[in-house]
Length: 204
Image 1 (cartoon, rainbow, N blue to C red):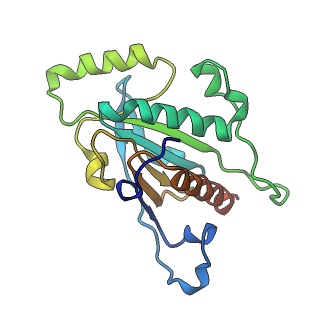
Image 2: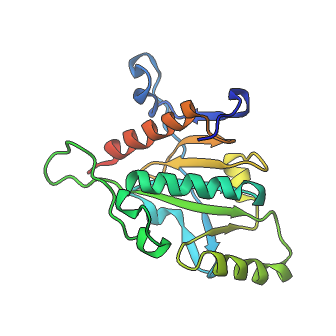
Image 3: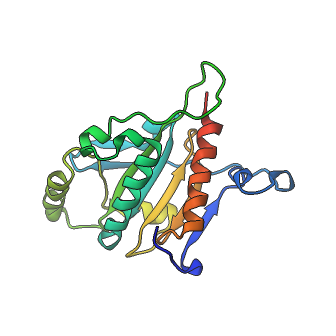
């Protein structure tokens, strides 16, 4: 991960996530907010993030200037939790199985880690939308990309323009972590800690 000034990186953990890095007994119980979001992908299919319930969802989002950093982070995270995806085509990598959560009781399911990119288009004119969709179909024919034409991500989660952004949603559909700006090593480590914790928490 690229190093970045700490003051330009913000991370918000719901208190139920904090036990991965701190003693939670001294903290009050706060119920994390539920995330609701429906966006179209590049194929004009409605995608409701509720379909990812049961798994840990990482939404990587931003404007065009942050797209390269988001793509690199998305590939890194996917391979982290789906190691057999390394070196494969996007279509093959998407089918790679997730590593199981260690030491689960017999019969319990390991939540997957689903990394989904969101392109924030910022209220593009209707006449431009077919062209934009066409570009994403060409550039990402085997990967679903959600297209945000109405600033929904910025309104719900906040967004640093020109930089990568992410939000982590747990297996129950609750917002548990948000990061805006390029990740330094400390923030990246905390992200992995949070995802690992939420996978174990969501195991059923």
